[in-house]
Image 1 (tube, helix red, strand yellow):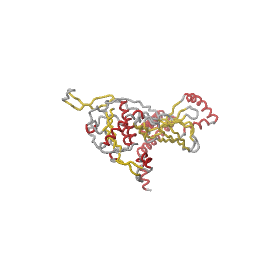
Image 2 (cartoon, one colour; image 1 turned 180 degrees about the horizontal axis):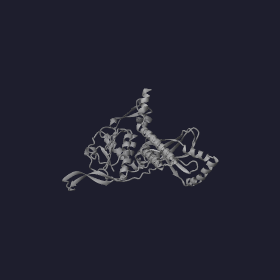
Image 3 (cartoon, helix red, strand yellow; image 1 turned 90 degrees about the horizontal axis):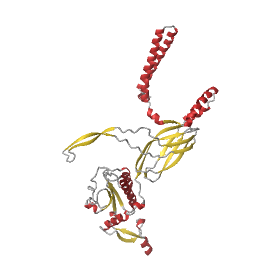
Image 4 (tube, one colour; image 1 turned 30 degrees about the vertical axis):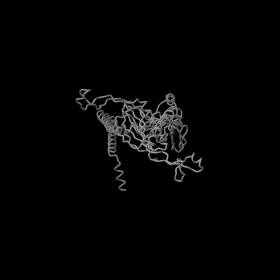
Length: 446
């Protein structure tokens, strides 16, 4: 019990309670002064009436100045504004004009049906959940699942729309100080000093939203959940993040659009768009031919054809030899561990490659990675500032958010030469690669 009392006292907001008791005391004194002013007025003492009335007004004003700003700071006005939003429709404007007459008639006749309907409209409470896949490929449709739950015991929900809220905040550019370098003279750079320059701040780009089109629910029964599947294709690669969604309804008469913002954080990583087979299949024979020549240069690829054993995988079965001999035959390879391929993405500096060419290079790297991942190859990945592992998903996540960067511009010069055969995508000029890397690589120029 003692611990409970301590925790309860620790959670009490002392400042708020102090303001509360001060406000009660001040309003009590103001009420007393107002009563005395009424008594003095009845007795004809105008001076006392003026003093007591002025005191009551001053006390009420002091209480308002000390309490109202404090309470206003404690209330999350922005949150309440985002949580509830009402938009008056043209039909609703006509409805308000008529409702004034109906309201007076309802008070006189005790017919409060209209107020019951309005109270039911405002009492709506729904729960939203959005299920998104962990990842997707750009330009390829994926399924999003929207769950709308009505937890009320007996009242259903009608005509509910789920959509992405519109950002109503103005995007201001402003100014900012940025680091630069003072050089004199500019060409010979005899003197170089750190400097700052005042530049116009660029507004933050609009954040891409996951739910790009609204989802409509006609009816959600009491204590039930309605589900809708939406097929959405994302036009660009990157990380899509959304922190909230809006739930709106015009029920019952479209007089008022009531919307509420639901805080719900969802992230979706969109991989680069995969190229069509016709766009990169012409490169595969050349890559495969040089790869096989590179491997064969260090030994024979096919060692022998022998009888099948239970430990042999099915992909090594030689069906032609099996058909000729009538018994199951398998191929045995030499230096199978040397069939290793490394896909390398050399990220260029900003401005060195046009945006369309850069995006095509990223998509080509993703397409080649997905293709060779299905082949009988020990596949690995590398790239500028790449810190992922050997899995395909690591490399696709790297390509999903990569942008031209000045870091690690000497990446290819420091790339170690290994037993892997390299497929390199780079923006360098032909002949600028190290000779040791050149003899064991197939180079694709952006």
